[in-house]
Image 1 (spheres, rainbow, N blue to C red):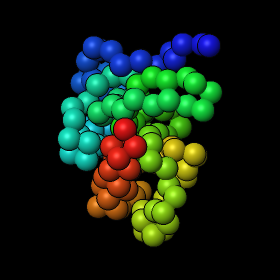
Image 2 (spheres, rainbow, N blue to C red):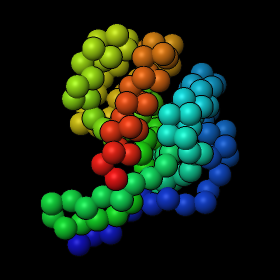
Image 3 (cartoon, rainbow, N blue to C red):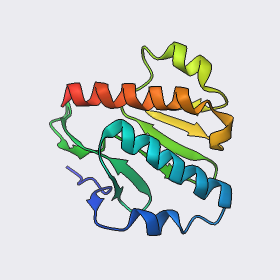
Length: 137
């Protein structure tokens, strides 16, 4: 079984975020960091070289693979900021309708910039996801 490449490490989150060249994206990421820190009640940690994660939980998949992963997190990508909403979006339809301009993957929320979404709704969404993940762990 292949080992998970993205692991928790001791790299500096602040140093990583300060390498973001786009001023707006860098400011957005620092603000998202505050939102997620408050929701997870955990400080930011680097996961791999480009993901900022908060808290952790232990999982065991149907295949027998198990490991540790973040409760929530984000990554500043070239095209957008990816937010990891590990609890998924099922049952969150009302929040998603009020969120603003975004797109989603299975557990990923993609935004271009923070001003495109309602920050209060984003906080609710992240908090709800963290709550779900804490109950599962």
